[in-house]
Image (cartoon, rainbow, N blue to C red; front, side, top):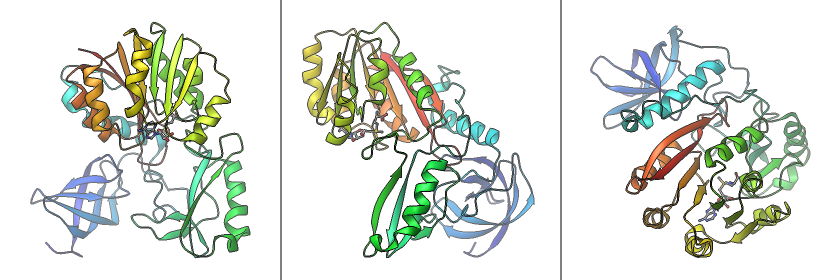
Length: 361
Ligand SMILES: C[S@@+](CC[C@H](N)C(=O)[O-])C[C@H]1O[C@@H](n2cnc3c(N)ncnc32)[C@H](O)[C@@H]1O
């Protein structure tokens, strides 16, 4: 087999990350971007790795399930979206299947562990912020698989408001960005101007509702790590007696404090450094942990601490099912995984958001 060689392959499934998986006659696995389940494709081998190949799509011989014409002119060039060539129903079932595959080992005991994915009411126009890059006055998104910048006029997954601002920023003030690479974000005025904020404007309420239902009404105390600008805290404070909410970003905490929540202590610092003191001050195990870490997941130190100090519930919100699984496998020493609720916060992209519920063993 050589790079540049053409082959015909049938795509068995779409794996986490968005690429199709097929097998060649010699039982060699090949990954093909922009494919659909069941596609019969002519492909061109691009990379030969140990145990698998990467290829590009040359010709669709038989179209698989859910194929449509991608609406965005930048699709395939821009690194953001991976599923615009599929209808939304197919994307949702692919994402649900990917989660089931990642958590396969748990399904024997709990076949219904992964709940039905909660869809976005609209798969386009949902992003309330976008991150842009500038390289010598070329302003846009990173190209697929590289840090080359693709200048863009508008983004189909961004809201109308963001696109209006984008048009002004990227093409109206080119000189502001001349020089080396710079990164900046364009945000709707309704969300904080810095720090993390959930991106899907259609699912903000639903996501809060999901997490607050998972926490339940029977735990009076909550220790919330990675609270950001208090997105979940505000909702949870309606039922809880007392919440300790911990966050490293002072700007996000400034926003959180503006919410004026009387039963919440917002604490600046790393969860790893603050959690022991919070638990001591609570003095009760009738409490829940809520964590919503960045995609890297929980630190080893925090996991070790949680294993030794279980509370009546642990809800873990994650935008990366691989680190979620990695952390749950370690937490299993003291906890049992009960449920995973996927929420499609990032339609058309390969990202999957989900919330997992664990209880003490
Ligand atoms: C995925 S965001 C979640 C924010 C918030 N829960 C929300 O829904 O808007 C993760 C947050 O964790 C914060 N963070 C990162 N590492 C942290 C740590 N070790 N301890 C506390 N907060 C941390 C980041 O600043 C960021 O605001």
